[in-house]
Length: 229
Image (cartoon, rainbow, N blue to C red):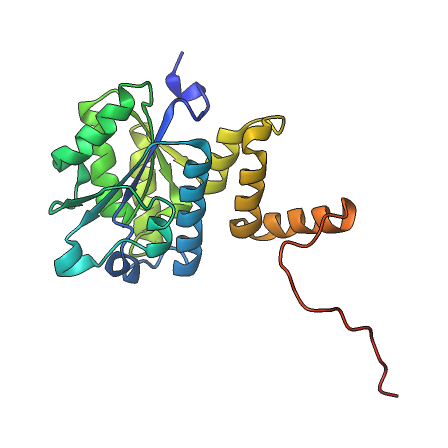
């Protein structure tokens, strides 16, 4: 049986963020960049909620790419930043060692979010697959390419060799799996409300209008209508 038939779980997964840096984001044209950042941070918070080991790696921070998104770093304030010179993260021994340490604990499903899809994500994924028995899950909507065509063709190329395309919310809900798992329920709902767009709005509506929960945000008094005529 293929290991790809096994769903992502908090026990078999680890996560790597590759080059989520401003200069790399400036070149992204395959997805709205604010949406990209929202999805990256939503994925990061998801990993934090489930205790997923997370590697953060950057390229040429000082000379070219700039620091990792602060919203991402604030989710993992203690995480080391693995700096590289190569566009291919697999060329850096620190990255290999970080992933290998987690894989030794049974976490061989590597969830990947990075910039750009057609360069840093693609080369890492191909090289990692060639050298290991890991599985790669490429988070398409928490990654971006220099054009929609560049992103899509890179995703196509990766799928052809067995890399699994996913989206960030898919990963979150696959980790949760069962709403009876109450230890992560509230954290998942908080992530959904903040980062999942219409789904999050629907959760807010259901909580307040159906279940009569208090609103999430404090505000001033509600002033009753007073017709002008």
